[in-house]
Amino acid sequence: MAEMEKLLAALRNSPAGTYARQAQNWVSPRYRVLRARYYKLEKRERRLLQLAALILAVLAGYNLIYLPILSYQSGLEDEIVARQRDLAEVRQMVVTYRRLKTELATLEKNTAPPAKDFSLTSILTTALNGAVEADKIGGISGEPDKPISDQFTQYSALLKLNGVSLAQLVDVLYQIKSLKVPVVVSNLSIRKHNPDPHSYDVDMTCSVLGKNA
Image (cartoon, rainbow, N blue to C red):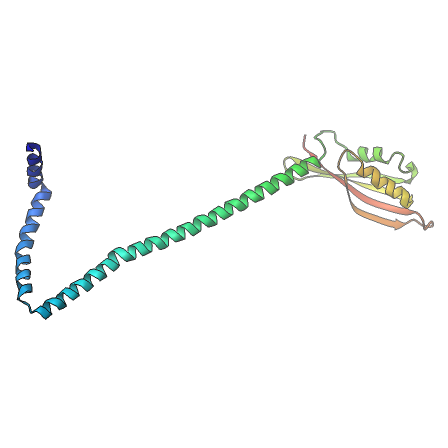
C-alpha cells in the first residue's frame, strides 16, 4: 500500500502529473460555466444542442474511425490482389522452368557425346558404305561449326549424290536415320539426273548438335 502511495506521489510530482493538474485547473472552471449555461437553456434548445453534439460525434466517428478502417480494408484488398498476381507469376515461372527442364533433357538425349575430334564427315562416310556406290557420292564437305551456347555446338556437312535411284536415296536416308549420333537432314534438294530420267542428283545438309568437350 505504501509503495502504491509512493508511486502515485511520484506520478503527481512528475512533469506529466504537473501538466495534468494544469489542464484540470484550466478545464474545470470552463466546464462548470458551460454546464451552468447548458442547464439555463430551454428544454427545446437543450435537445437541439444534444442533436448537434450527436451529429458531431457521428461525423467524428465517421472520419476518425470508419474512413480509416475502410481505407485500411481497401489497401489490404489491393495487397491481396498484388500477392495473388505475384503468386500467379511464380506459378507460371515454375511451369516454364519445368518445360525448359524437359526440353533440355530431350535436347541432351538428341546430342552427340562430347569429343574434341568429332567429325560429321567421317560419320556420314561410314553411313554411306553399302548404301550407294562410291562413284555416286559427289562429295561430303564439312561446314564451319556453329556454337549454340557454352555447352553445345552445331556440326554440319553438305552431302552430294549423283545419279542415284529413289531406292538408293531411301537407303541413304535410312542409314543416316539409323546412326547412333542423332543426325538431322535439312535443305534436301532433289533434281533429275540427265540424261537418265529415273536417277537423281541430291544435295542435302546434315547437322548434329554436339556437347562441347
